[in-house]
Length: 575
Image (tube, rainbow, N blue to C red; front, side, top):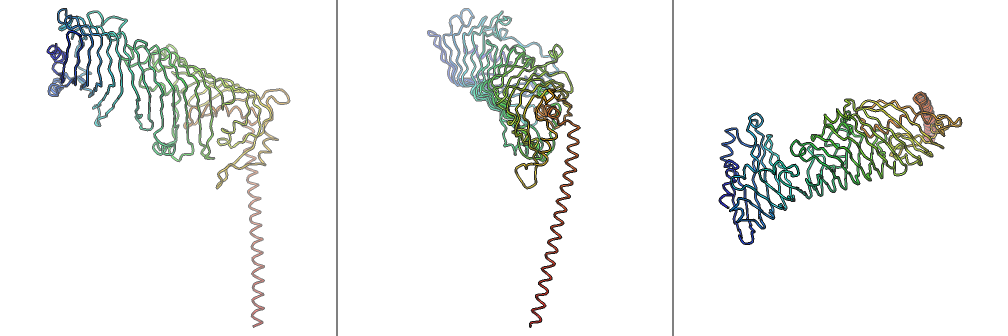
């Protein structure tokens, strides 16, 4: 058996590989066997010869195993009937190194159909069955030599459990089997990798993959910035969003495994995302290049994912989402917070054929706005639209408007003194370049205070005079007003290239809120003109007062100088 095993490896690999081990112990009576310090070793001279002949494979393997244990091997049956039956194989601490180098001749030369496992095995055994195989504490190392700089990737603490392996003349075409098995379970512990741009660390506490259950489960997933906010922008040299993502669990079910492994496409039925914590931050005050956001909306980013995706439904459970933005004028940070977020997304895909059948991805979300008000919002993304066209509509329920201070005070320099919000309905058609739609804003007892940024002072300063004008002459206290007619909130907003997706959502609503409270574009222009005139008048008055004060000081100094001169003359006469 040992001789035939070694010959089998040499013959099936065209002498590229041979095996070595320190000890092989087989007990015919018990049917148990152990193989210690096993190694699969490539012959580099044979490999170089295959390269010259343009027959070398793209990957070279080096394998070592601390111990391989076989339970209840039918040695007599294997010898007499050429049928190999094994209850269990346990492989401890396998260490596999894959050296990858892509050769062009493998793309252009027809090398023929590779042999099946049965075609390799049939000269020794006509059938092989293994009830279970367990691989414990696997280490994988991948050495990529396709570029001038060799890259190393490693994966440790991997576990694989395989059930019911059958290799014979028919098992290869058995639709109930997955690569000759009834099921393969793969578990990865403590997976960690840096993103290609080295800006983030991606970590997964545990990855579980099951072919029999057709699912992948990822526990405790995180994507964390590798730098502080200040250093992050120094690294990129431009404005942009910083993401901090944490997920308790992500589960993908009903995966088409054949397509996933053979064609590297992920076609699945349902993805469940549990307890996500999403934090997005942008600093518009950063003195650097302007980060361009055009074409970076969620549905457009999905189209750039290297893996082809087609997921029928994504369920989101108990998410917390915060978006914060530092203003370039006030240098203060405003925040929008969504808690207890639940919902689902339909037709998440970047597959061209699927987009032809259905080009729309839809999302239906229910959440708590600022942890205080119920908000339901629906999205409809046109995945085929080059301009990133999408629609968002929804309803915001009753809340105390003063909680909006966290957003409008630092970003709009407005302090909300009182506002009883009854309801806000909105419907907006948007794209990478604009947003148009309308909203209906129901509220009572609106009173605001305008603020301004003063050089040399950290806190925003009150504008009492202009606030009084705004509250008494411009801003409508209630909507509907005394006439019971609801003032509409038309939305017509151009989108600047540096405005991110989340920022544009709330800016679109703000564009409709202004006319709904009586501050339409015409009024805004008149107010801004009046503010400039009043400011100029105030500046002139200040300038007049300063000059008057200066003249008074000059006269005072002249009188004092005259008195000093007279006193000196008197002193000289006395002498």
